[in-house]
Image (tube, rainbow, N blue to C red; front, side):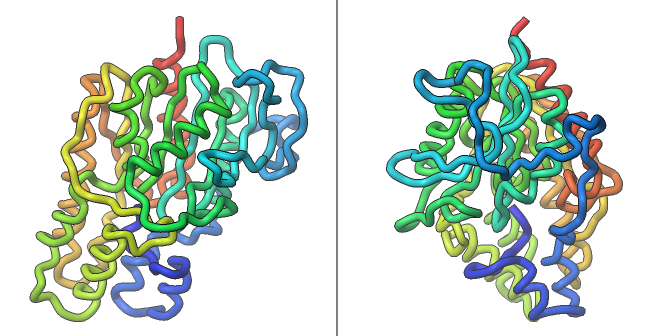
Length: 320
């Protein structure tokens, strides 16, 4: 999850209201409009991940349903969920499922999806409250979010194994989901994932006595984790549980952008780094690396790092 976003609007709205203030440097992780390098080859040059779905000659992942190619609205638990799929299935290979960060939607990861589709079957989706999916009726917990993810996986992967690649809040949701679904989740890529103890980390890094931008940042983040976010998702702290002996790559940002927060920035950077290390407990095959030239949006700042991490985990997860 981003360090903060407006509860009723986009991060850009909040940033514009505070432009050129010290806290703006912290809140605006990166420009979301930044491009991500696409893959090579004429076949992918004009690929549109958001074009209407068209029938494919390949077999459908679920009985009676044609595989999704482009975007399609599917129904999960009575709700409309926006899904995008691309790339051809690889024999024995898992389906890669991209999971966006808080305040984002699947469109933010479109270029990454395009690149990965040159080698893998790749899908993404808007969680309830994000992008073009339905809004949640009320507060959601991680179990409810997981039910939507299960419905998406049933439709886009069927019985095939999956690799979940999540950025920020998407990484946290993937990491919380995998331990209870070891039958289908065979690999994880966490791109600067929200730490498992983020609420406690913020409370320790920024004390109640803080004033100014730090106090505002503290209050905003605690509210976000209590459900005041577009997804109405309540995000409690909790221990990291084992997801089995699966390949896991944890990639953290290398540019210390959190230090831009006056006085308490270095504390936040140290807490974030410690939080990334905690995710290593997911598996005995977990690896931690740093995207040296990246802020929070690793797949934008250093797309090659993100692609290589997904490639490695997917290769290890392939059924031999």
